[in-house]
Amino acid sequence: MEKTTHEENPTNKCGNDQQQVKMNRLSFFLYGLVVGALLVGIMGWLSMPSMMLKIHQSKYDSVDETCAQLKAAIEANGWQCPAIRNLNEATAKQGVKIDKQVRIVELCKAEYAKEILETNPEVSTLMPCAWGVYEGKDGKVYISAMNTRLMGKMFGGNIAKVMGRAVSKDEEQMLKDIIQQ
Image (tube, rainbow, N blue to C red; front, side, top):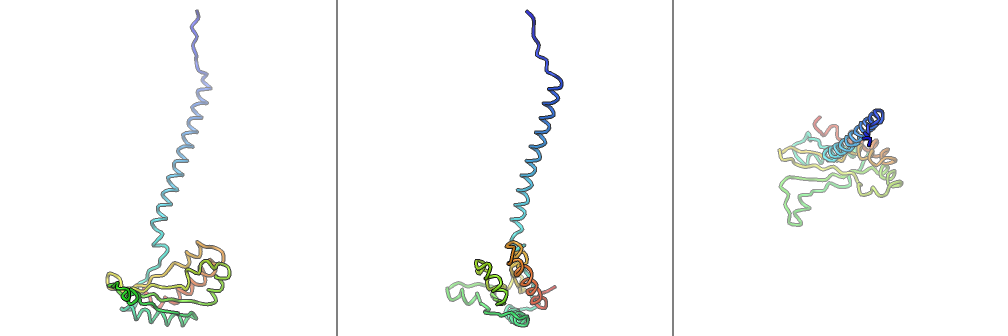
């Protein structure tokens, strides 16, 4: 009886090895792609708050003086200031005391509002524009604002045109003499 040996074809073994190498590379690539996408997502999520808000230190020592200067700058640039809301007084009426001074300064330009609302009325929740003016833990006065340029880019289309360009440019102009550079 003859003993049969099953010798592998050397070319077949080489082909299997090459196929295995290709599979390993593809697996490594896909794994790296998934891990990279997760890392970018996590970094974006963590940096989102600082990207969405712009915080500036006021040149003025009081919240009320900063609000008065903002109102003057808003009106000097052809906008309206519908209200300055005192959050300390509003919460005190409900029995809640806020230790640091906080205000909301509203600003609106009817032409811009119309441009956006005619195409995207759902963003009315973002209107009127507003700035927060508050006393920080360090006793200094700060102005916080939505990053209208970034917000416009996120929405795209007409909102990008109005908020991302015109509103953002006007806001920079209004703030330039009020914030620390």
